[in-house]
Amino acid sequence: MNLSALRLSYTKNELNEEKVSKFPFEQFKIWFDEILNSEIIEPNAMVLSTSSEDGSPSSRVVLLKEFDDEGFIFFTNYESEKGKCIEKNSKVSLLFFWKELERQIRINGVAKKTDRNISEKYFNSRPILSRIAAAASPQSNIINDRSQLEKMFEEYKSKNSDKIETPLNWGGYKIIPHYFEFWQGRENRLHDRIVYKKENNDWKIFRLAP
Ligand SMILES: Cc1cc2nc3c(=O)[nH]c(=O)nc-3n(C[C@H](O)[C@H](O)[C@H](O)COP(=O)(O)O)c2cc1C
Image 1 (cartoon, protein in one colour):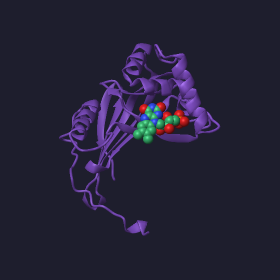
Image 2 (tube, rainbow, N blue to C red):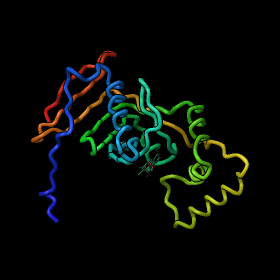
Image 3 (tube, rainbow, N blue to C red):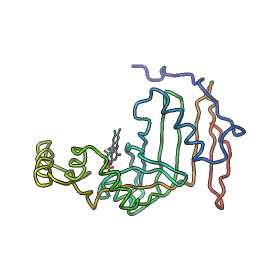
């Protein structure tokens, strides 16, 4: 396999500081709407990076479930590895990569737990078996084998058949950004990189070299 010969030319689009929105959330929405109208599967999958107390980074995919002019919400187990990292260091980064449109968005911000009512509303909207799985699985803990997981699932299901409450250790985080970078692939590797940085409550816009 010759990986060094794998190369694509990016020619689909461009990004121009004169034409982008003055507000990064609006620019995000413009791109996200375009993505939703494309054939991309799970366009709301994003990489969340956290760091532990000693500064070691870790990344994983989570699903964006809501966003507004303040931030980006995903749901998880608060006692998972990522939950523990955020507890110690709420600075996180998000990354979207939509290869079909040759686009990447990097977002840096601070994670805050969402209000309980937001977590409950989303939890209750999930299919019942997903709710049971979220409640029964001690996310990020070591377990013996697959059968232990299935047993926990079945036990939880038989004990809580009438109503699955939102577990106290489960809920949303909202990432409140202070930095966005919109990356559009261009020909000859002269890519467009437009950054929004929050300074004194205003968004400063500049371009980075690719
Ligand atoms: C497409 C995709 C979507 C995922 N969505 C979520 C999610 O929304 N919430 C979540 O907790 N884990 C989600 N996961 C699983 C995480 O990547 C990860 O395995 C899990 O959250 C445990 O991570 P941690 O041990 O670093 O806390 C998803 C994984 C994939 C591949």
